[in-house]
Length: 502
Ligand code: NAD
Image (cartoon, protein in one colour):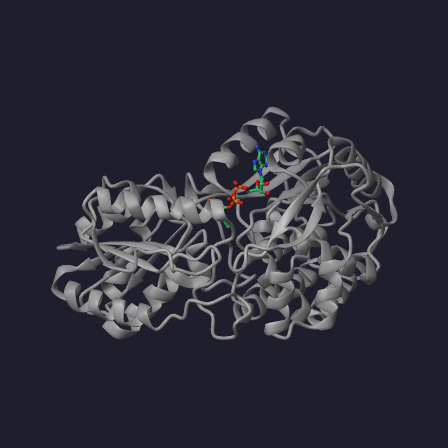
């Protein structure tokens, strides 16, 4: 570990157990065994506020993947996992949730240090969301069943359906909420009785590796959960093509999702894609301006804008436009830019230098295309991958900053006159992950909700996420759902059983 990172951990009093985890050699988790780097290549993990090296992770090979799939396959096809009674699966999932809860502070510190994110948000959102997700799906393990049916066909039959787990699930996740996104997919898969092979994003594998230790401690049979660290283009692509994997559940960019989808469908795999977004927000003239401004600022700047359903395009009814923009700027000024471990941090560094450069190039494009920069727009003069929260006003629909997902703290806004225009602008995007409305006019709100082409509509709120509610996109934001009972439908096959009675 570089000394800048050691000093950073020292300054913010990071716990001893977190440091011990960060300095030990990182291993993959395959078939219940810890697999060290050995002669494989490695990947340097960078702490985003200091740009120092935290540790290295092994770059897994396709032979490692074969071993992991075989372990998951063996366990699924006839291992003790498959024979566990539903309540035993439920108990194991609760035991894992208990362990995550008992280690919540350590996991939050690991996530903050690895991703750069606010440690308070890591604790309250990422880790708490992970615990809640495991508890929610634990309850489902014992409540999955088919139907008995009365067919109209001549003759006498007993006809019923069985819900059976899909099999080995390949889990590929991005770097913005590494632990939580993985948990959404893995908790549901295990509740359904599947086994899993997980590939975290190469930038942010550490919380998943610590999670694997807790899986081991909870007593899951070997091979039920496997973790391979490695590059997307190698291990991720090989997973999408692997004949031993029955389903791919992928969260990431639309661009990579398209490739993964093509490959997976080629092998007739089941598939869930949670992809990019550019979620619109409509602020109607009757909205409570201060409350809406605060919620809109949080809706884009939370996690420094590295949120798939961030409210990234805001359309404001003309009568309140100037007052709303003033309130938005005022609230944005209060958001503290700081390293993730600072307890008051709201705007944390972005995950990598590449992401910082990418976001900076969008800010430059906005300036070039003539959007009005009303707040921010600079890279703070300090080490680390920081970008100021930035607001553009009077943006046109054809601008690059309006059309493309920036995945950083950049908000684009424009006024609208009537609701028809607002709807057209909101739906004028290849994405359809989420949308938000700020208004207390029930009539107008209820008329808007069905017309917004998005997987989630928030009203007077943003990014309220709970394991009981499905999450997933329309259009190029993907298909299939994570969370809620809907997710379980994508993890189980329905088998139709016919018995002829003589
Ligand atoms: P990404 O698409 O670059 O990578 C996602 C994962 O795919 C990583 O694990 C990566 O290693 C792997 N990968 C990369 N190339 C691959 C390939 N050729 N084959 C298989 N796997 C490959 O995305 P990212 O930059 O890590 O994350 C940001 C993106 O994720 C944004 O577009 C964001 O909107 C999206 N996202 C979506 C949701 C959602 O629920 N819809 C949630 C979070 C993030």
